[in-house]
Amino acid sequence: MSGTSATRLTRDEILAVLDTVMDPEVPVLSVRELGIVRDVRLEAGEAVTVVVTPTYSGCPAIRVIEQDITSALHGAGIADVRIETVYSPAWTSDWIPTEARAKLKAYGIAPPSPAAATDLVQLLRAPRTPQCPYCDSRDTEVRSEFGSTACKSICWCRSCRQPFEEFKGI
Ligand SMILES: [Zn+2]
Image (cartoon, rainbow, N blue to C red; front, side):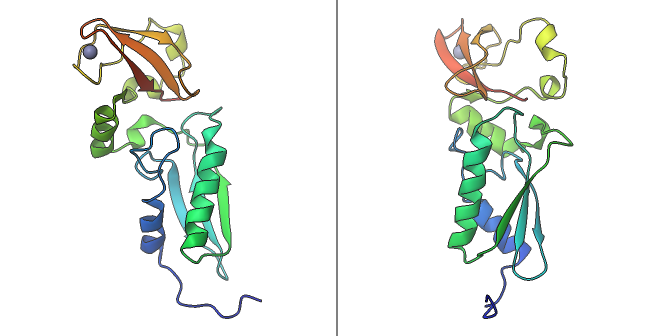
């Protein structure tokens, strides 16, 4: 019995709601800015399907993200929210727009390197040297592949002698 449908939100209005859903691990970026939200579909009836792609295949944050998206849309009056998780095409850091990269950097997290993100053999190659978000130096080292969360690495900058985190591409 959901027959008393008020005016339905448009796709753009739904996207605007999703702009307010921040990533739990990188709270300066919304799930849209990170490229996690791939599509929004208005289904028959009043259902809305949000298509999401996790940034990292083992990323435990995707469950939190799904819950946050669902409750944000419930708050906007959409009762029937469906989340569809797609793994193909795989998320790439190319989906993070330039302004969002700048926000990541300002937050003290090195944005993922576009080249490495799409390269599945990156783990077999020479050690990565992420660019320091504080002084832009490349004289850095990855100290631990798993930082505060599985999606971030702990790095060290030899130039300004500060630790920083790198948001991993995959
Ligand atoms: Zn530095």
